Image (cartoon, rainbow, N blue to C red):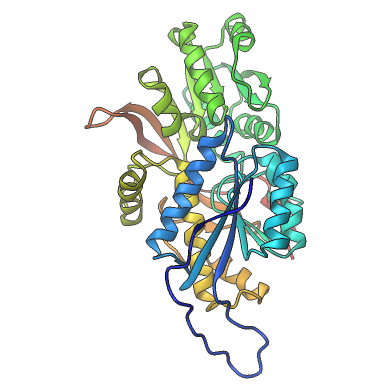
Length: 393
């Protein structure tokens, strides 16, 4: 897909004087390469991240760090080879200052080395592979979402605490899916059986037959985007919801899935680091304006896109637009001088968040909408399990 500039400069370039004796200079604008899945079964996730990011730039009056913002959008089509081609265009031809947007961890692992080699900061608004949290951590990678295992860890703890002893785990066979299993089983100690599907799979007849034969008392699934929508519909249609309690990370039980499935999801529990009912000023503004702008409730993907924009804005502002001083820019990113819609969090030594994780349940709100409601906090100031493997210099 050809690159398209979707956010144009709306203000004149600020004149910034440089102190004598320094080689750093202020940029005249900030260019962001937004590469995401915008077509195929996972498109809804990329669209949500994009819309959240764009709302953030709109709230900042078309600027990032007081400089005019230019956001270049490309579709990776959920294909590693396409992602690498589009990333090369953004990095080498467009010479973007930052990259963001990737949904899926296999694509992040494919594109990461290109950004790192170009010394371009990648601000992940979703993908959080264990590799980049541990031994392959990199100073040019920051994640404003979570490490892949984290939401699954929170759900594993809840299922363990509730006494379920026979669980089937359904997840795609790709890096994010493997991290899901690792995270869930890190805190769930009962009997479990793993069922792996193809990434992008939409028909689950064989898997549902296997689940029926296993007769679990609970099922934990991580199937992002259209995969999760189809799975829940087919699970309920097969009558399995009468005997098996469903659990999921927030990715598979968020507003995009709820909108498509509806009432059959009532009573389903899921884990998240964010919810649209969080009661802080930043989140209230974000949720209200997102609904007004796009006509739907935001998902956690949208919240992460919004926070990615806010992190870039804070860092560019802190360095007064001097984007060529990579070390100073890195310190500004690490400082995280913005207020997140999820509440407070901080970056660990591996540039992944240390933050709270909550339990949500799908219910009807006061307006009669089927949506998520925050129930309780599962983890406080929770760090990922790989940070001690990170030897970042």
